[in-house]
Length: 137
Image 1 (cartoon, one colour):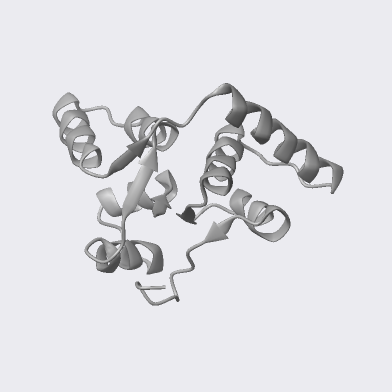
Image 2: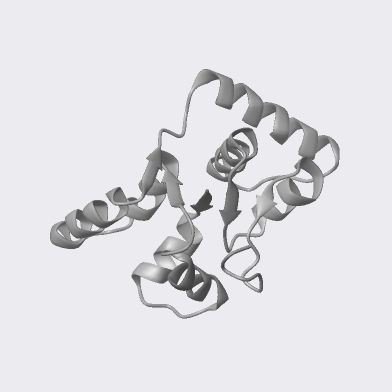
C-alpha cells in the first residue's frame, strides 16, 4: 500500500504536473493507494467552495482510508519526535510526525513532497516512494 500525503494530493487535485503527481497518475491502476484521516483533513481544510469540498471528499473516499489516530500511534509518534529531536532534528508539523509514524507502524510506503518526512526515512526506516521509481516498485 502507498499512502499519498496531502502535499501530493493537493498538487494532483489542482492539476499541478510534477514527478510526484505523474507517479500517482500512472500508479493508480497498479498500486493500492490510500490515505489516513489526518491526510484527508489536511486536504479538505483549505477548500472554501462547498461543492468542491463535497466533490473532493467523495473522490478521496474512493481510496483506502485509515483512521489515523489512536493512543498507541500517539505514543509512537511522540517517541519518534523525541528520537529525531535528540539527533538535533526538529519536525515542523506534528501532523507529519503522526503520518510518518502511521506509515512506519503499518508498513506502508509514503508518497510525499514534504522535507519533514526525509528525517523519518533516513533515521527511522520510513519507506518512501521516490517518483523516479517505476510505478510497480
